[in-house]
Amino acid sequence: MHGAWADSSSWNGELAELQRAGCAVRAADNPVENLTTDSEKVAAFVRTIPGPVLLVGHSYGGAVISNVAAEVDNVVGLVYVDAAAPAVGEPLSALDGSTSVIATKPASELFEQVPGTPDGNTNLLLTQNAFVNYFGNDLPKAQARRLWASQTMAATPAIDTPSRYAAWQTLPSWYFISTGDQIITAESELAMARRAHSHVTVFHGGSHLTLVSHPKAVTAVVGKALSTLLAAGR
Image (spheres, rainbow, N blue to C red):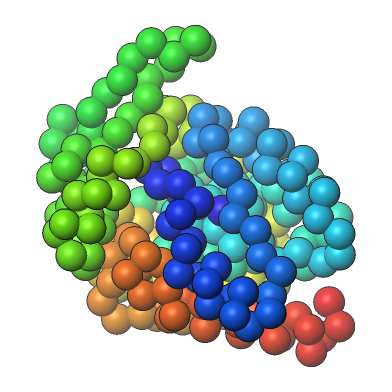
């Protein structure tokens, strides 16, 4: 499940690695409109998948999988990749960390606002400077600029809606944490991982888009989760 200001192509590297290994894998669309309705839409898709499912979420996608897994009965584990894992009642906006650029930089430097959604909310796009220098700062500049140009909008309710569920309370989870993440800080992710009793992998360096820049490292954690669940008969 991809995050805000991205799309399912974020997972292209991981998809290639997992398909080569013979895994059945899908990268679902994430509307990034409202955490509650986004989760309901993704849950409807997950219900169409036969057999056990391991959900993997990046960034805002972590909040989505935390809710989806509580709404369906075939999810057996969760993998968070530089992601948010909110508790019940927490919005994504409370989980970036005190040293995140989201918390320390003026909104005018980070976001372009696109008004006029049917429900009166505002859509947000990352500015080119924010995307290249904070969001995907370990990517080649030309690649980061291409991703900036093709980013999808994120509606403010996606970021501000409190989470209804916290499936990590009852499901095994794995957490991939990049020390170079400037959007959701490593410290914030580690705190969320500890309260979820997740299996933690710390990647030294990277960015908020380590899933794009280092897909093999991310895939290795997904593989560990799959192997553990298979060995446990899940």
